[in-house]
Amino acid sequence: VILIAVKDVKIGTAFIGIGLAPGCGTQFFTNIVGYQKACEYILTSKNFTVEEALNLRLVNKIVEKDDLDITIEEFLSKFRKLPPIAIGKAKMLINKSLENNMIQHLELESKTAAYTAGTEDFKEGVAAFTEKRKPTYKGK
Image 1 (cartoon, rainbow, N blue to C red):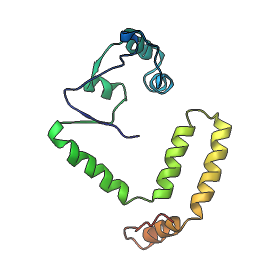
Image 2: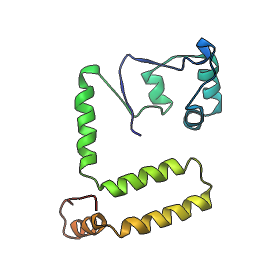
Image 3: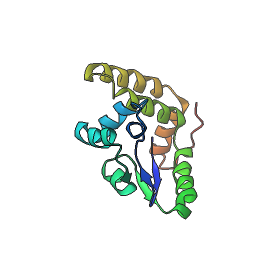
Image 4: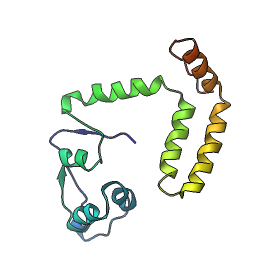
């Protein structure tokens, strides 16, 4: 996931503040920010700025509110030019890396690479590279 935050927004968890145990996201949050910071923010219902979120690696980029649509379109434009099968498989691998041990993950990567090596997009990518041109991916 690539997260773009608007400047001057406050972020936080309200669960504890209303007497509720967190219902989702604590594992992801803790994996990203670490145990100590997770305790600090979750247990105290502490809000944080987008600048803090960027430093904590919770967001990828901060933009002005008026620039949000343009920034999102720039990211989408880049993704539209990439091979969708490889992107989907890469995202799956990133997500699975949070739960797999090293051996499991290397096996999954090997199987996934073999699968994507059989796609038309892979053939197009290699051909475009050797012909020194930009590839045109079709998601096949």
